[in-house]
Amino acid sequence: MEDSPYFQQNNKVTRSKLSLGRPTVSNQILQPSLSKKLQVKIKEEPVDDSYVETISSVNQGRPEQLVKCENISSVIKSETDVKEIKQEPLECYHDNKDSGAMTTKTVLKTRKRGKQVIQYETVSVKSEPTDTDFQTTSDDNRKKIKWEPPLWKTHLENIIEMRKAWNAPVDTMGCDEISDRHSKPEVYRYQVLLSLMLSSQTKDQVTSAAISRLRSHGCTVDNILNTPDDQLGKLIYPVGFWKKKVIYIKKTSAILKDEYKSDIPNTVQDLCKLPGVGPKMAYLTMKCAWDQVVGIGVDTHVHRISNWLGWVKKPTKVPEQTRIALEEWLPREYWGKIDLLLVGFGQQICTASKPMCATCLNQQICAVGRANVKTSKVKQEQIKIKEES
Image 1: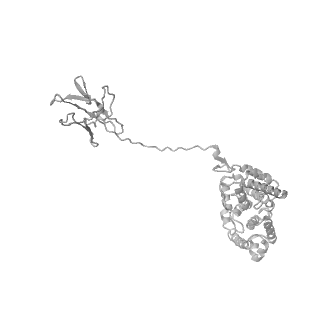
Image 2: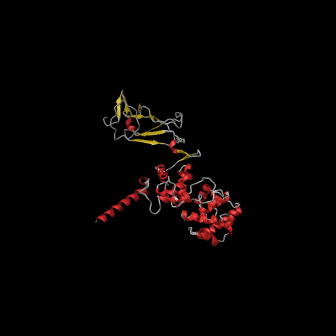
Image 3: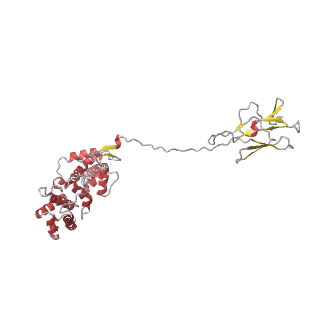
């Protein structure tokens, strides 16, 4: 009886629940080790709601006892409920065929495990903008600022301090200064446009001299159209690419007479359609001739200095890219001033070939300035060493 999984209690033999291999509840009866002679075979029918358990008798000659569980479909309340398999207490009985042999019948009630459907709900979360994400411009438009140079205000204050004398060539020989303000408005606007066309790849001194000769000759649309090409070339020489500019001036003057009644267009798009007129000339013409600031006029000086000071998020290759980059972050109230400040600064101090970084107020907050000052100090030390040796 020691090796048997049965216990005798109150003249009844009870089988331990551990031998069934099923989850059990707390059992008050002591449970011995499982017998090797007992064979338990469990068969599940997944389609049917019933459960069949077959137990072999301890004696080898006994047939198998089949017990089929009752249909428990009525017990299940909902398909989505999570149910657990419960095991009822064992029922014991005496076999009538042989009083010496006993067996145990176990009735298990099972429940189906229902399916759970999980539904997800998408909730959109909007972050509230902070005060640092916005900057108010002069026209009271709230513009979202994505990026701006960290030291641009300090750069600008230093440039204004270095340009307080206003004695650069552009200050006295700009397109608005060399044109005849006392002439008719359409004539003045025409001269502003011609001076900008001549200023491309040309110093201000040369452009100013050429416009002065044209004004003495008669700088109007009709008079320029009646002037022969060779004579017009002599008047504007030695501006850069003067032969091509003669052709551009003649074609542009003809378009202005036919389509604009000897006046100039009043939009950037129409100005750029004229031969020999680019975006820089168009934006400066709108500012000087029509007194409308619709963009930043970027020439070679503004393009170079903006890249050196780090005023563009990424290095730009052409002035038009620089204009777009500047207008993305620079407040609109500075658009009409920045070109004149930077052009004069580029003509006097921050020149292209030999910038005067040693006397520049931005030398410690400019990458190019720090590099040039360091290089100049090294060269001076080398010269001293050679002189001493």
